[in-house]
Image (tube, rainbow over the protein chains, first blue to last red):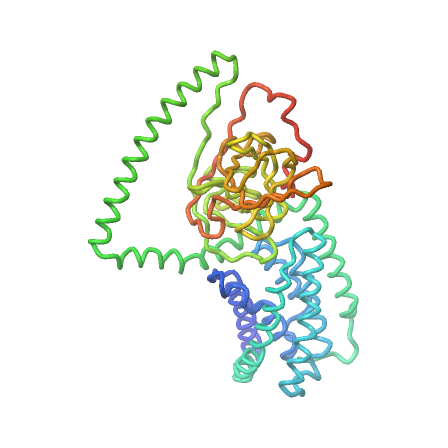
Length: 158
Length: 294
């Protein structure tokens, strides 16, 4: 039982690191704006799937993300905190929903999260990329069924 | 997950509010003060291996394509580079002679001789940073003598400056960031202005150019060296569009960066050495102090 716990913690942490790597991986300019927000996906998945990710850990992960992407310290932290808090509120009902309902909820949460990040960066005086933010929300939403499907299957295996 | 029937300790909502306040505090401190520089230093150094790891594919691909080039291609390229090198050496002779002459004339005029700038080369890591800011990561850090404020240029012009240094790498801001400004001067007319980024790596804005200035598209602007941050006479931008609006004191000028802001891989770091004599007082323009003060 303890071994299982350790194993799932390792899976959780390594998936978070992989998400961060995918986020800072350089892409050609044309498709760069369509990159899903992998870190947000990871945070959402681990809070919605059996509430494995505590909000404190999500916050720490946000600090790590801020450092890795040379962002204002605390902005991703706030964003991921919001994701995991909202996620943990609906985690119990979430698994019972159909995929369409799930995606609608995810869209709503992602919109809130993106609005928060845009607000923070706007106040800090950075330009606001509305188009690429919208594109990111949509691609992140598209990636959700895949993440949920694959992730749940992997999770139920051990 | 097992949940206790009666949750002990602070509730989740309470912890959420606490952490949210903490994030807000961190953001304010990070934006307005330099109190968190120590934290940035340590955390940045810890995270750097990830950035290096991500950079590996693109640098390996570069090496591989070099390996796939056949000998013939390399030969022709070598010949071309040699010819270019010969030409540049010849131009350099001319430049050195002119420089010598310039120094002599300056001595005659009792003006200070301009010192040579220190130059280091560096490589930009292929790392995708956050989309809100125009930032780059460079592979040279404090151990190579890099310090904050050093100018980054590529072979065509000014790219930006170093904002934060770590032991083995550093972080720079590109001139296309809206929070970045460079004091500049027109090569043709001598008009002074300020180049400010727009967030788009292909467009700059030129501020504080008086309505009476004689600017035409194609005019080149070089650093004026006024604020003391950028060494003088490095090319920055060419004017693309000038529009006169009556009632406004300044021209609305847009310009194109000379440096390939989104494409350059190898860059030079230039530490300007200040001239010894004080600059004339009429050089002070409103707002020429560097806006990059984060």
